[in-house]
Image (tube, rainbow, N blue to C red; front, top):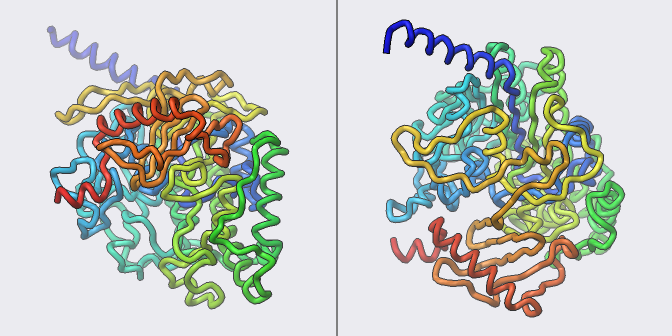
Length: 544
């Protein structure tokens, strides 16, 4: 090939890349942590979230979207387009300095970190002209720096590597590297840049905005804004808490009914979709004495304030995008990593009244009592693959590419569909190999038909598994179970079967009525678990 031809081809290639960069949208994924299905206003909640609601109402809102039921498995799927087992995060990740979730070389799907047999969204978008930023929680492996964001395609990073940290003083949280990092370096002393105290939700947003402002405006950017709120410890600005104190003295029984009625009024659910009963672990609100009611009111007020603060910060980000004339061609996606968190005692744990002690807590929370409200109208929570643990609010907003839709979008979708959608939108191909590693095939589908309200073209069922809890969704039918046995074979008595079209809240188990359908679905689900090498923790420990 002549030198002139090589030069011309190089120029043409650069020109194509430049034109693609000019037309490609900016991408922002906003992921919140441990928030329930019904907490934000557009999904029925009473918490004030005007900025998120405006994005939801101005784009496409999904009624049936599913995450992976836990923090790091969801993040693994979101970043790679694969089910978490194929990324090495079949269970949980290793915090910095530990190997506590690494089950050894015999279990490559359970190493506790994002492996090199997958490629991240940032690693693919970078060569196509994108600048990639992460502000917030990583939680995809922290045992050593080779697993951190800058080594997996991101250009800039500010946040926490582990799963949670204190909100006001993360620099004093010494548990397994749960402090704040800037790039690859720990931040020794956090400082606020405003008249408010340092608070991670504010700081993550400030750094996200800084990354955007300091980037080359000619190039598109990918921002992964991964908030730790409202994950425990439950801590918030006092002025935000004050907005909600007293509002929850109505109690969870009445508030669950009110949220459910709003969901029906919004068109999210039909009237025939029944509200699930109060969790059997949770007492009736009327049985609590006044002192306990005031405590529980404050616990929920702190939680609500954390979500309110997220919305305030989303508003700041949107203001910057509009001022920089980038809003119209920025695609924003919003979701939560799992259902509401009911870990610990049903009525919450940790300090709540003493402000100084509360803000030094590491795991105080609001308990199943309020998590049951957050999950309205569903039952169960984070960890589980029932609707309360895996159904998430999900919407996409992009003025230049998505037609605002008045109606809810009811086609079912899950995390592995986000990755191929964004590759399509950004004009990027998924390679067969990356850095000499053969990549698993993508099984997700593009969500682009939903941009104009058209149905998705799904050919295969959807699957999910976490901690031996699993589901398979095929059309309107959902096979779901807790403690199901894999990979030797399904235990029939542990599977439940629901017709989601009639029973989204999973109250009428049809396992004994639809025995043939159950066996057929269980067999298909078993084939998936074998292909993806899905194991149970007892099996792993036995082989070790």
